[in-house]
Length: 177
Image (cartoon, rainbow, N blue to C red; front, top):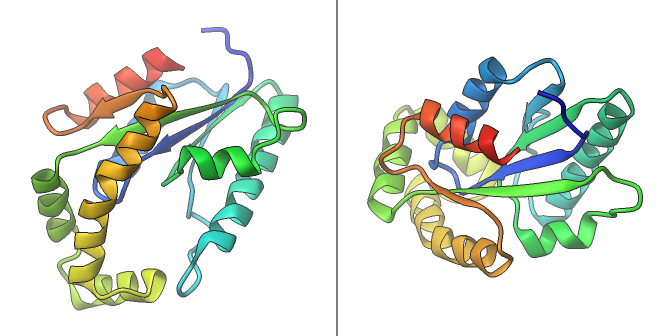
């Protein structure tokens, strides 16, 4: 498959399956793609919008360097279309695509409750988000519809992950690239 170097952000709230799908994409796509998790460099305590903007710029610079080598870059992490537009510079960054993964409230809640089962994992969520475990889950569930609306308003692709396997979601993403 011939590609034109670009940067693709796979977005969605915690629990939609971004990390699992990113692992699948690594097995499906050729060496012409470099694939990362948005927060693989770590998340500081109470990370906020300024940290997110700086990290977005970091990944855009990585994508720019990869584009010079003929590679596209895929980043999995929460990305809001309007916030991305404020940081993205089409003159200095490769073409960008945002794809949104969505899940229903019940599925999100179930996945998140199944993920953070140890005291250590719950403490890590509190450290990174500044919110208690229960509040974090409810915030993710509450944030999902607004983020979905932002992607729909911008005319960006949305993939519902409720009933699809990670392999199916990954293949749908590949078809959008």
